[in-house]
Image (cartoon, rainbow, N blue to C red; front, top):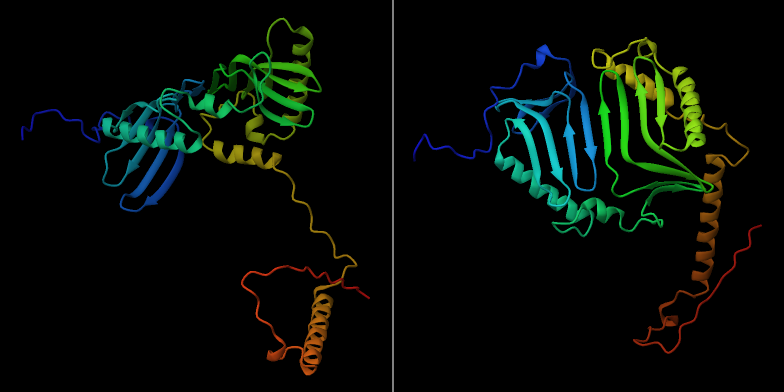
Amino acid sequence: MDEDRPTLSYRTPAAAAPDAASTPSEQLADLDVPMLGKVNVELGLAAPIRLSLDREELRVTPGSGVRVRATGLPPLLLRHLRIDLSTAAFEHDATGLGAFEARAVSVALGAAFTHLAPWQPGRSIVDLVMQNLPQRADGRRRVWGAGPASVWVDPDTRLDLAVTPEALELALSHAVYLRVIGLGIGLLAVRYLFGRQRLEIEGPRGQPLRNALLRFVAWVATRYLRKRLPAALAVPGYDPFADPDRRAHFQQLAAAFAPKQKPTPAPSDSPTTATRQKSNDDLAARLEALKARLLAEGLFAAERKRALPFLPRAVGLLEVRVLHT
């Protein structure tokens, strides 16, 4: 075989991957995987984290890249990925991955799409998921509802999520409408500014009263949030990408919003376990006494038993009412 002929290997060299020690990063996993040994997964934070989703595709830019290191294997750096939601095609910009892995992921995605819905190549999985949702005359679909409140989304909406050192932002190409008792309020963007500890909500233009209501809601939510922020997250100019203890600080924030466990109620006047056990024992003794009495009367004798016919002409139902005293 010609040693100089290029091949589509299942792994490409990863020597060009940058050194993770020189850039901020967040460890996502540190595992012992059978046949692979130690596997370390890190998310580089030298660039913003971005995700975009519409009915045609999903795009993810994981910061400055997801780094995977495994014993005995070349390092892997995934800088960008794209999934075609109509064909399940998987594309990537990665060091350490080749055409074989991309094709394998595409096959796995196609199998997952088929499992979720009656998907066929050429039709978006998003359309299939949304096709049975309630629809308004303007084409919007209801994706959530609880009592008088509901959320309506245009199927053509593109969602863009970005996490930067300055803010966490969710932006939409078409307004998502929250309807409460017939009143519709459109949302185009929700943004949290890390350094200023402030929440901002934007609605469509041309709706001054509704947008004023959104600003008031954002102001109330900001005050509510600031009272629960850990001290590290409340520092002016806070940068989560530069904070080496960001995970612990955000876990503290999540714990502040976790529902409180209800205290165990005090014992009531209901029968205790011992009392219930004694009652069960008394009932079992009474049943045994009744069984012995009926046995003595010969009701269980073999000559009294009659064989069941293969095709009975009638079936009777006997109802017994037990009176508790």
